[in-house]
Length: 263
Length: 373
Image 1 (cartoon, helix red, strand yellow):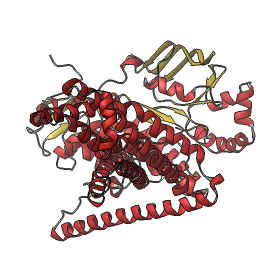
Image 2 (cartoon, chains in turn blue, purple):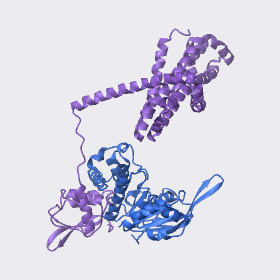
Image 3 (spheres, chains in turn blue, yellow):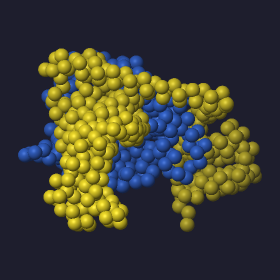
Image 4 (tube, helix red, strand yellow):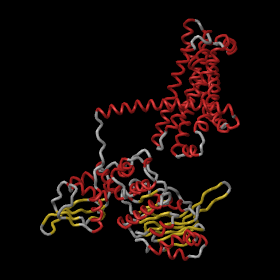
């Protein structure tokens, strides 16, 4: 890798054509993610957090601007072996419902068509257990899994080829507090062990403070502030104030005192 | 020329002993390159777990790479192994989590016997569910008759449009062409006997009594039967059916009834339309091939076809419509919340609907053979 920039975004403009008007989501947005960071994107609804994730993945094309992922233009992302460059955890898991757990996890490797089946199955079993599932779960179908397990399987699938970059869309949304805590500590352990770079979108302040090494706030069509949690909270902006210092924020801030920043 | 990132194995003589040196990127992405894994395995075969291994030179080692080595070592660490701390962590995870996939026990004779029983039982259950659905529909029809203002009329008119009106062009085209083909074929045979005028009888009886309703039913089963199953099936996948149950709204009343009513009304109309188009096609072909004018054709038709046939065809179509709707809804409600089941349900729905339509048509033909002659 040339340098430590995993994702570099320059002059991004995103707009949606609505009947009669143009809705600009991002305008001249710059954003960088360095190796080993856990960056959380926060912002009000409609500020284009998920859109930004999808653009980093190459699923959506910006109107203007340049996105580089792992030092290469994003248009090269979708090629063969993309799973070894970036992993994505979709909000609802996006597991293939026709496959069982093991087939889901092994799918990216099997699709390469060159690896022996036995090796792939073994590698998938290792990943399954790395995310805290049991070998018995391997033959279950996605429809029989709980919300927390679906997220774990989806995470195992995202990590099957050990990508250096992991994107998470609302990783703890829809999980009960226990599963949510379990999932957060799993993510933290994986980030430490696998030297991952993580970009996530989350509304959950607990997750935010426990995992993030850096927070980026999207508002007014830009990243208005980015930095370690403490700096971001101190920033003067109505959204930042409401988001972090409202009642919810106060509660989560307790955590901030208990946990020194993750990692 | 080999790139430096290509995973490879070299022999190094460090400290007098021969050591296997692991070099390059031992990652799944690299292994995916065609032919590379075979070469690597051949190279691996030269060393076993007893040899000295040096992984420190490897540019990258991911879990798949570690798994490959681990399997090669016979699932234990070689005694002489040199690794970097990061590689050691990867190896440790592979070591800790390597496990056999829980195998499914092979199906013995007893298993096969039980599977057969399961198959029969599930078929019986399907039949039972279908009967239940039909009964439920009858009850709901009574409920609707008692309180018509509570009926799902908006849904009903929507389905009537989608099932009936939008099917008109395709049924017209197919009907017209079948009429032309049938007329040409019979014309050839009839000319041999000089019985040209009988083409009106043959076309009239065949198209009005059998082919018109059948063609319309098969087309509608393919078009609307599948869409009914898919609509209801998707509602199962997205939990909409459960949401409806929770609100205390009956699936049968809100989903099955409007579709069944719409098909029961649209089907005879589409059937008459198809028949008319087929007759138009037959009339045209008869004019061209036998010189039978449309005027004669239209004058002879009422004599050739009795009113009984017309009534039979129309009532048959009502039954076809009901059956298509019930089968579509039945398979839709049976869908399990996954995509594969949805596809299977849709296919089963269309195949069953067409088969049942043909079967029931045969029953009608036998039971009412004296009607309309």
